[in-house]
Image 1 (cartoon, one colour):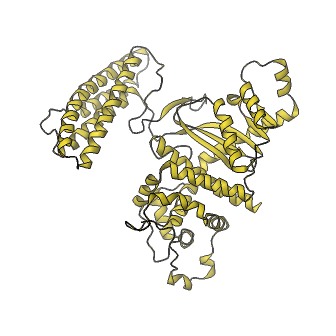
Image 2: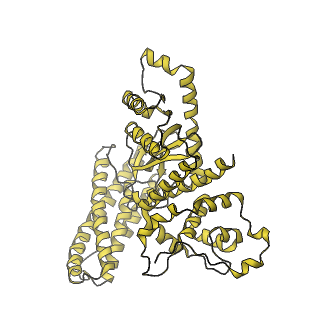
Image 3: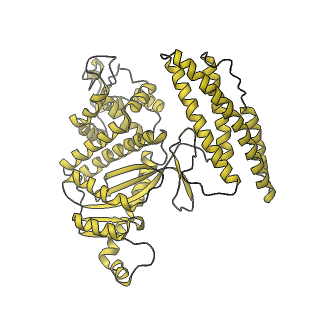
Length: 457
């Protein structure tokens, strides 16, 4: 059952001194800004108005999520800090004798909301910022970056060893539910673990002999994975027959579905391993994680990390520092086709086309210059790749173009700020919908915090 707010005042609050009731300037401004119907509306589709247990009040949930991403707290740390702070309790509208929601409740609510509700929240915030003349969108600088997935550095042997252990655990739980209990299956997790320990010792050696030993041990882990997946397929088929006679067993259905997915991913990992052992190092659309199969390897050419594993984020920032548009995508799509849609989305909120649009060489194409000019952009600062014509080189040396180029560099600092201060360096929610939810909440929190800075200026 939906609860939009909990207006019941605490009897103990009347005894508090005024200093204890006062919020910080930032939290007071955010509290007043969130008091708007537009932020409640996206949650109405998730709950019934009368049936079910009362939910956490929406205004409390929004303020809890703001504190979590503003100060980069875990759910348990967040609930503990809110419980111990009178100011944070007042900000979240939880009375002194009121109970702070349990961390698992917040996890479930965020998962239930998903990326669609978070996107609606961001759109509502941008619409309110534009109506209040805070978001202007007269100038835009656009860039892409990588949001890392919450995974370890992947290797073929390590992924196969995890697949063997995961398949063994799923089969064990399926048999515990009374399905495929007489089907033969051998758990080869310990054998795969021994090969991984031997592989780690081999890497300490010097010379080419170490890589020969690594390839041999990787092949042995692949052999164990093939034997495991053959037996797991038989267990999966027999468990499906049992599930047909027990259609109401939801837990068994989830286990069978997860085993099916693990088998498919193991086949893909085996193909990748065969390709690498055959000498092919370039494998398109490579699977790098079993827990987050949507993550992809992305090369941005950074000296610190030439290859990162995660998702590509497009960020469009206006002249006042608001993130006016963002898009999270799987893999590493080209930058240039994303520019015009981003400018059009910002124009929808602000009611005007940006007068200045700048971006790095990834966005610099003649087609983008032409389409932006047709859209009404007067000043376009997109550098071109490679060797340019004499006329283009002369244009890029002019003072207005150099000023736009120098202003564009500031978005690198904004992206760094988002990663360091609002958790966008690494998503803690897995798969593409989870990553979109995490990034959307980080952007929502950042724009709210930025609003307090701009409004006070």
